[in-house]
Amino acid sequence: MDQMSFADIESQNKKRKTRRELFLERMDRHIPWSVLVKKLKAHDSKGRVGRPPYPLEMMLRIHCMQRFYNLSDPGMEDALYEIESLRRFAGLRLGDRIPDETPILNVRHFLEEDPRGEKLFKEINASLGDHDLMLREGRMVDASMIAAPSSTKNTDNKRDPEMHQTKKGNQWHFGMKVHIGVDDEMGLIHRLETTAANTHDREVSHNLLHGHERRVFGKAG
Image (cartoon, rainbow, N blue to C red; front, side, top):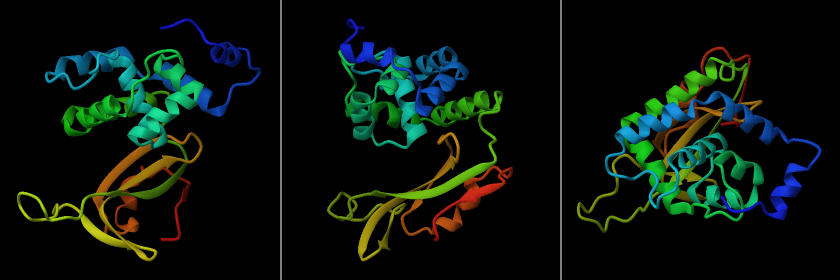
């Protein structure tokens, strides 16, 4: 790391920690980073994690923050520049070489495409569950659209069969939906399901719950 900036010094001397800082401190303590990094190193045969050569644990921490706060790749890059507590969790300072959206995307694709990525996320959930951080009483459920090219100008002259079009308001969209279940106190994403864009939210809402909730929040749909 480079030497501390004035912003780093001011942050250390502030009188109160935010809820985000307290949450990230708990995640830092209870997620077995060294174990997860060792498993990733053993299976990243194509070198997709950590290129350019950023530390593997740092990239894994950044990916976890993406999952915690449901951030896009460019959104995660912006957040690292804007929010000191996120940089600290990743082991970064403002004067360091902060990963841009490309290595963040590469790590995300590696973890999403490889079956071990899902196992890794389940292992994180299990570790947090051991400290009573997962099975909370409240859950919020919601869905977000992921747009995809609707053109048929490709090799197969077809649209992706796993995607579909849907109307939201007065506008048509083509792509997929990401359905998420989020803890209503901690803001941590517990469950995630992907479907075609025309799937109604209520069709997968039961998959976003763990069955022990006392309250569930969702949109009118």
